[in-house]
Every structure is written in C-alpha cells, then in structure tokens.
Image 1 (cartoon, rainbow, N blue to C red):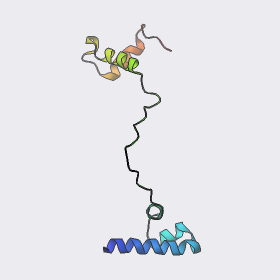
Image 2 (image 1 turned 90 degrees about the vertical axis):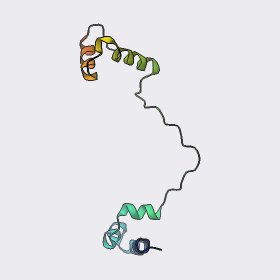
Image 3 (image 1 turned 30 degrees about the horizontal axis):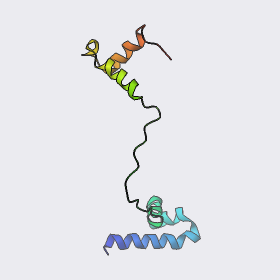
Image 4 (image 1 turned 120 degrees about the vertical axis):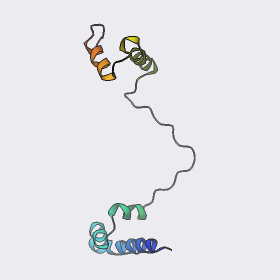
Amino acid sequence: MTTRERWVAWQTEAVTALTGLIGVVAACTLVGLSRATHHRIVHPEPRVHGPREAPRPHPAALSPAERAEVLAVLDSDQYANVSVAQIYARERQSPETVET
C-alpha cells in the first residue's frame, strides 16, 4: 500500500469516526478531505458491464427530412460564399420563408 493510499484510508477512517460526533462536513474539513471524495470512497458506484445504451436523440433535433431541407439551402450555389449566420439572416428576411 502506497503512502497516498494509507493517507486516504486514514482520512476515510477518521471522517467515519468523527461523523457521529460533529457531522460529515466538519469532519471532512477537520481531516482535510473533500466531501465529494469522501462520498465517492464510502459509496462507490458499481461498474456497469456490457453494452452501453444507444444515445437518445435530442427532443429538438431535426427530422431527417428537415435536416435534408436545411442542408439543401446551405449547399445551394446562392449561398456558396456566405456564412451560416448570414444565410440565417437572409432566410429570415426572405418573403418565401413561412413562419409556423
């Protein structure tokens, strides 16, 4: 066991012993151990084995059809040398744009 491991073990034991007398916050402050570190040591999360869950799409994400429509506007020759912010401003001002 390294010196660091022994030191953290001592801190954890001391905080555990003092918690009943002065509380976790005061015990951690007295010993010099972060409360977050103490709680991670005392209540470790079990490692999850196996495949990860597939990421969920954001609720405000564009549908594939909407995404294709936006990319078609961005890739058009009309906006070849224009930034996205300028395209957005021009499209907001154009009379063909329909607000929903």
